[in-house]
Length: 624
Image: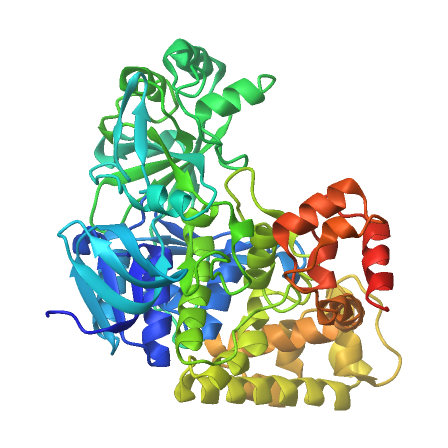
């Protein structure tokens, strides 16, 4: 036997699979990571970027919990931007442009340096299931490998089909074959499977782009990165570029609409609403004569560029002709055309909060197999599935994050409670407690919880405690120390805010929206001496203290609301409860509750179609 009996087998080495393998192994499980191609671990199959609106918060949460995505993103970034800085801190979202090849190689190196992770290049074609419990996997090489739990992270590979115009062929992504067998077996076991689609744009030779006709988008001078544990050193950055389609471009693309697999009905799956193909945008927004395109470099040492916003499954000649009519692309050469891909997924109402399936014990799903889109959403699910697979193997309590604790909690609750009818993408608007779930405080929210289960390292935890103490000390100083009019009124006048007539606490001055903590530093020796270097760690301390003081009232109110709503989470419902017998419930409520089988009154209240009256009926029945 070349294989031992593993605690956890992870199928697929994309973003979800890589995080799952790392998490389970770092907790102490013996892990086997099986992938079709060891040269494409954590490959950025679509755009070469991490983070963005709400997604950046997820990456910081993964990092705070001890995952690898934040560190790998920082080590491979070629540009950094903090989005939404003109809005309140609840909306600030970090985003990095990454070197696609460095990102993948860094991930592989980190996994190879992770104790307890073994690798095997092969295709899993089936599961070994006994008494409704998974006990191993069956591979294309004819091997049966035993284990105590399995995490499926199959991405777009399950019966994947690629479309370019009238051409279609099997594949998980361009250049990689599809995976067959798993869907068919799971359906036989009672799972429900459906189809989704996604797409990707043309890749262009940067040597043939005229950037002088485009708008440059440089990175931030203040590079923060994602990781709380180690900080990036980015001495130079590569710019992205902005250009636009035109009415002429749209007319050219329309000449291929009759050959589009989407419009011809050859694609069965539902595509992403918030990242549509260019032909879908033209069709849905026919009143618009132009759409933005972001031209993104693929790395430090390549001329390949990604045209964000130009995803398409039209014939390659139509794509090419339309591309050359866009400003800056008049002489463009392409590396490959855009294409659409459709694939199997399993509606996530079939999962528990741990991401373990309800039908088969010790089997976990993570990533696009659950109907999500995006590297960040996949990585978060992989992390949680890996954690919980380990915990169950070792008979420990599950690790579950609530909606008021993390965007990851919002993501998983949305999936298993509301399901998906299109590829799920995270937005700040999905989080009702987003003032609490800021990108700056992910470590303060989650690192201690992770340390308690053994995932966050002792070194990381010590850094977290030191940071927390520095924030508390700075807030205490600002609350207790006063400043006189002579020192501060000049600065206040320059900010168009009234001066003071007597000494005031620094914290009181800071409450003014026109005043930033950095404005006060030159006037206060202690602040100037303590934070004069203002490295990235110092800036995080200053930002955190300032946010906590300025938004204290809002934060307190949101915590109170979260506590009030969370009381419903403590009212548990039995999964075997017969809702059809409760005739006071609406017919829709009985149907939805029977389908989802919520674990609490709180989860029941978030199911689409469940009214407050239905919740009241349940509460009364439960004696509440």
